[in-house]
Length: 166
Image (cartoon, rainbow, N blue to C red; front, side):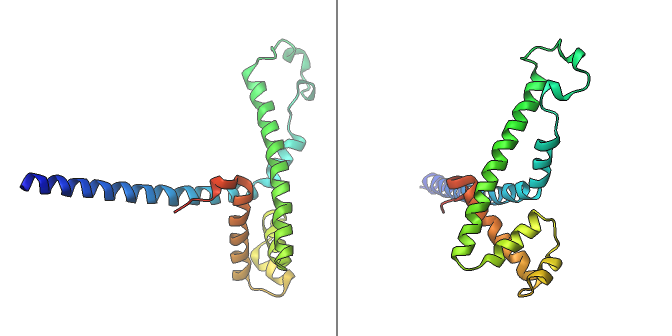
């Protein structure tokens, strides 16, 4: 009888540990999606600049003679070109999602939330200066709006992967 009770106790503890682990994984996944959206927005201007000004073709490099010897299969060159293409796709996706976010805020009659978000991420303004420009909110409100819209943007950016079902 003692052996059965011990086995039941071990099974129960193991099930509870698995539940806690799964709960922790869901929470971590949700936080990761939010963090990825935040990182994309914090680096959006850098990514755009990299695409616009980065070297991505052999003709962009001054020393074309030595590069002519490289084959089209050169891994390094291809990785740079692929990176640029991924960046272009991501910029287009972010731009589309920003349009959807702006439209949503306009429909909710809260365009100031989107302005605060845009001023913070795209114009690099501080929450204090955003609050001064908008005039109808505090610095703390700006932080709250930016956080709220980053969460909404993460759903636009990552779709169903951004929604973790409990």
